[in-house]
Image (cartoon, rainbow, N blue to C red):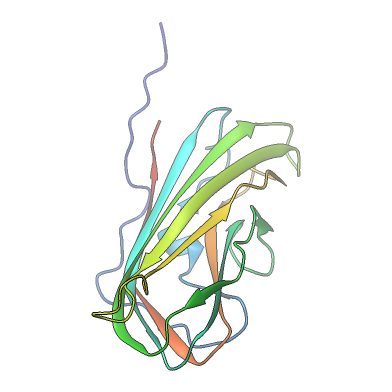
Length: 179
């Protein structure tokens, strides 16, 4: 008999806004252990995870934005799955809505330790300056296979690096296994 898998949320989204990210160095948008966790040994070859998040962003000046997806619980210990290129953000937006969508596929699962492979790609979109055509921002990220350990509790961390003063406030973030 074939296995039957049910897609379900692995963690509930937050019930209130999360802490705004205001640093100009790479910072996790949310705590992966709480909002985008992956249980030990949950990965199998062909398993797909979807991370969805959204919120508001404000910028005081034009600068660059880099989005870095990581397989792991922090920006410091997570293995990168391919940072985006530095994308220019519009000058002075206030509480502009944003949406992030990321798919991660487990390609191969090996023995415990850093012996498994995952890859993922995603996009981040945000509203630009109102009444200014073409000022919205779309950032594609990911695409780099990563060798990881899926035998331990882990998660998907999304790193945010904005080169200028500004803030990014996640209003929700969650992970879903799709199969």
